[in-house]
Structure formats: C-alpha cells, structure tokens
Image 1: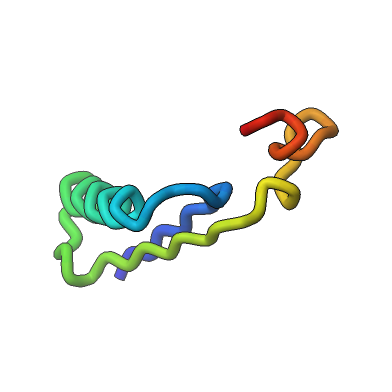
Image 2 (image 1 turned 180 degrees about the horizontal axis):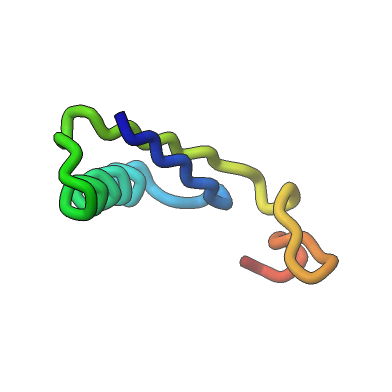
Length: 63
C-alpha cells in the first residue's frame, strides 16, 4: 500500500485538495501499477507562519 504525504501551506480550496489527491493517486497507479484503491494520500496543511524560506516566514514573503 503506497502512502504519499504532502505538506502544504494553508489556503487551498476543498476542490483543489480533492483534485490533488485524485492526480497523485493516478500518478502512483501509472508509475508503479498500484491499484488505486490501495493508494493513500495524506495532506498536512500548515499556517504560513510555520513555514520558513530564506530566514523569513512564508507569511512575511506574501506567499
């Protein structure tokens, strides 16, 4: 059972997250032949202030 964990900065819509899960599942299925039903996708969202880029938070950088 493949498990894919994706870390995201918060702010995506429910529809965007659903599409991401669908596309990741399809990619794993196509790449390694795993049945779609066996693919697990975990999305972990974090606040912009919890993600640093070059010594600043993503919130400071307007991302």
